[in-house]
Image (cartoon, rainbow, N blue to C red; front, side):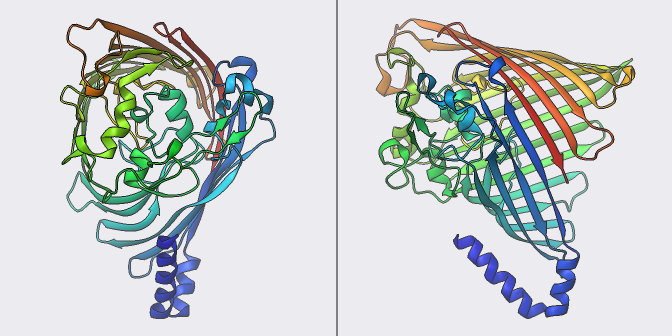
Amino acid sequence: MKKVTVLSLSAILATQLMGAEDLSEMIKEGKAGGYVRIHHIEPAFSDTVAATGSVIGGKLKYQTGALYGLRFGAAMYTTQDTGLTKWDYKTRDGYSQVAQGLHGDDMKGYATLGEAYASYHLSNTDLTYGRQEFQTPMTQNAVTIIPNLFEGTVAKIKEIPDFTVTAAHITKMQYGTRAATDAALIGDGVYAITSGAGFGFVSPVVNGTTGVITPGFGKEEFQDMGEATFGRTGTGGIGGSARMDTSGVTALGIEYKKGNIEARVWDYYAHEMYNTIYADAQYKLNAGAAKVTLEAQALAQSDVGSFSDSLGATALNGLKMVKTPSGTNLYSTRLSQDKEIDSMVWGLQAKAAIGDWAFNAAYTDSSDGHVINAWGGDPLYTSTIFTRNNYRADTSAYKVGGEYNFSTLGVKGLKFSINHAEYHSDVQANTTGLSSGVFTTGATVLNEKSSETDYMLYYVVPSVKGLWFRLFHVERDNDTRNYEQSHTRLIANLSF
């Protein structure tokens, strides 16, 4: 809470400098906003690790008006059970079910001061210091109750026409409600570091016999970026000190938009850890009756300094071995050929809108090592609702889909979409040579196959501003490990 104290003292100092009348105007011109959101998972249509859960929560934010370009803001976030969660599911097979991905560290409701900042506006530049949402390609969450939140300094500069430059230094983060879903479900456990949750997040554990909950860690307090990414040295990642003592993450983004062309490049320098460069571009054109969008992307990652000798590298050893749920060694993967972080993913996507229909097709290919995707972002074209295998080493993926808009049929705001993706990952058949992080010479290479199909109804209520509903059903399958998942969820949102 040191940063919050600093902000409070800043506000007191500002009161003394501005005078009571000025402060009164500042507060009077302030604006409040936020959202109320419900997530409800229906157990009658879901199975395996995603059976039941129901919460209501949201965000309430207030930002003062500007005085000499200075503003203050704060936002509270909360998630609370609706009373419809079927808690008898929590002990089945030892899983806590999707309550992990909707509730707090102890699978109960909680509230958090997720934003507390001071911002300064000059010309076309905004400088913000404190707790805030940081929405960039590698940090922006999918729809959830409480997003991943960050603490640091962010400058957004729009001084050059058609360009937006963002420079930031992030020192801390707090994982949102979706973090357990990212780590345990999307990350498939052993691949958690590739799915949007770092080792600094620890899922709660439910005893399959007694139902006793061992609380997790990471949702209800801010952690240093090194700790959030690679966790702690203690047992289970809860006790002990940070595995890596770092200076945080310095990010620089340049975005360009003019006419039919959009492009952006981001560099995330995670001090003492690794560097990530992400870039994408899109071009829009009219091809007769169709409006076509062509897109390309690339993501490259490499370690920084002596990472291979650090405790962070030791923490990643678990990525090299894949086990069955019973703990049997199944096969191994590789972190990279040179025992360090070294990965590259590229992708292509085409979209076409024709009347009430829209179609999309995408392909991505990764080489060498896993992408460490620890902060919640998911920019790759072939990702689906519960699958991000495209961040794994040696993986090719494609995704095809379509969407229909019901406006012509008289139902404005209603859309239906379907997307299907296939993922093929090369893995090593035996488990020898795991400590080296490379495939054993002469070992048999298998191809792990998995797929996901997403069906979604999305309705934006025309008569009520900010009100929308999203109903989706997911069918997920892994032929190699004989794993299947069905999941149906309703999300209702009212923004104000």
